[in-house]
Length: 412
Image 1 (tube, one colour):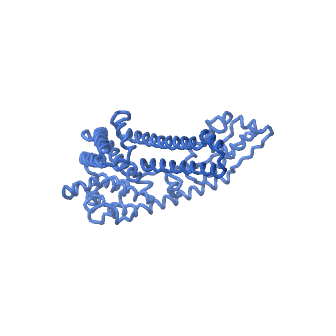
Image 2: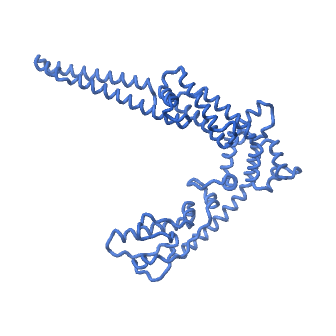
């Protein structure tokens, strides 16, 4: 979404009562957009949000969030030295493994060095070498256990390879830090673009920035993470006011629940309720705790489902009845469990009905009395074939009627 289309963060006390209420209600959406915007920049991801590295992360990001790793030469355990007749020598291969591991007990339980695991996950040059050495050692020692013949151990990593990988990682870290430095100003400008002028002035005043120069230049002297934290702090409504608005929103949602048959609307509805309740748990306001608001929601929600005019949402009605009878906890999670259980029972009931109908029809079509009557009357082959076809058509028609009835009665 372009920055121009995003809602701006503003001071919560500005505007009339209605505008303030709208600001409080949309506050979570604005913060979510601001976080999404920060995650698109290197500075926002590393310094502001402090995200963790993932497979889809850029190389610069992975180098910045993972510590620099090194592989040093290490002497193999004595049991390995004796097994391969190694003279007291060191190998870089063994420097990639955790020396506290017992290499003789279970090969599958080997672990890489704790200091090298982040580098391996970050796909750094040292991490790639560590992964290769780890697999090489596993394969070598596994072959000695499975085969009786003697296996010669050859070190995989050389000193030159380790030195070259280390040098390339050092250059990559320097390039990542340079990219981070160049990313700070665009990140700050994007942050200020999502703040109203009144909020920006308040941020400058609170941080002590100069008012004689443009805010983007004045706030450039401060870490972007500090500017972001101050913007969120000043732009957030008072906890008591936010909790009251969230409680009102939850009560409003409880009075108009969608049908569980419409899966898209139902998932969106439950997501909004769960998000509001989770925020109330963070705010911890005595008058609007999650337990109090959730109990009010469940009471109104169950009443709205049982009084709904639609007769097609049988699983929701059964789930509401089960929660009302305390067969499940009177919470949002308890209702979800009850709904899942009602859906499973409905699916099982439909399957049993169809199966029983098919068995009854097939038994009727191949009953012994019909067969003996045909043999005694000496009907021709054509007459017998006609009777069998009629029974098959009847079976298919009734099966189709049962299936249509079950699909109309409940749609998963």
